[in-house]
Length: 412
Image (cartoon, rainbow, N blue to C red; front, side, top):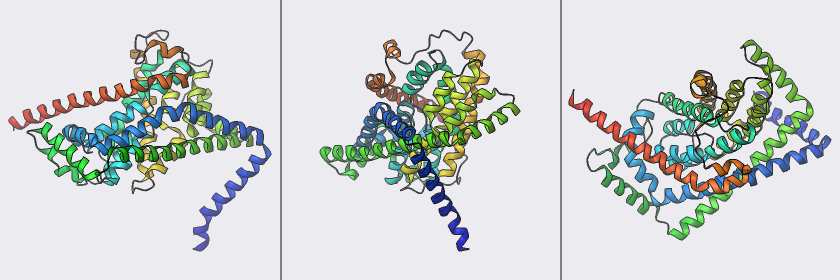
């Protein structure tokens, strides 16, 4: 019995020991991998995520999340089986990318706004790539073809919403948060109820603006440091696996699986690289040669939706203080990756009849000529604007849901 308990810890220790040996054998390659991971964190993740970490903390403390939650409750509860605050999480997550969704979900659980089942549903479909990375880095940078941005966006975000609809069946049917009985459920005077919810949340928080800002910056710095450490760690681990020849074996295994499915074996490098790190997998997909563009875009869509084990580790570290489980998140990522690839195949002829040009552009034209890290600094205001647009769109859908519910009640 004791030996069974020691098998996993001893295996982990042995694996780490082997990794340390390879790190000593290939010090230069490991050093370069660490520097590359640090560069990704400083040039890409820090400027794109840190402002949203701070803003989300402030919005929670000021009660804005509760305000939007009260208004969006008629949409989010029947469609996704989550409280209205989940609509705000979805909006800011789709605009700013992973792991913002996990951070806000953990905060909502901490404030007892969601249950465990609701949190697992929410984090499952709000863990997505941000539009800056999808358009600027993947479409323009890696593929050198802005036209694929529309196809990637439809596949990635569309599959994410489908995952959200599927996750509504996850958990107990009678599992709901205390928000069910909040003033937001009153059909009349919904706007007034939203302001009351915001006011109550602000009073309950009780922190001054200065204290709120200080704690927001402090907690955001801690989180972004953890994210950076995980990115560097996975870059080093991936380099060790490459130098040890393990990656070649994984490539060969995936190639055999792809041949069995009738897919080009050349995309194995993108899929295996994306298993560990989303940036690496997307880069491999964009630089593949001698295969149809549709398969390259499908591989990139799968990688973006899977997120890479680096993102998985970030989400797990954020959710560690909560009772939210990793298994539902893992299954959601697998389904998200498969669905996004299928959407590319199904919608390719409709969305990409001409593969060289596209009138679809979410970002100003001058961003496409900028290096990706430089574009991030200029695109943050557009991320904020996109968040507001998504929230407005959710408000419109909420009104439609309310009207449909009232029409249905009249015909009963």
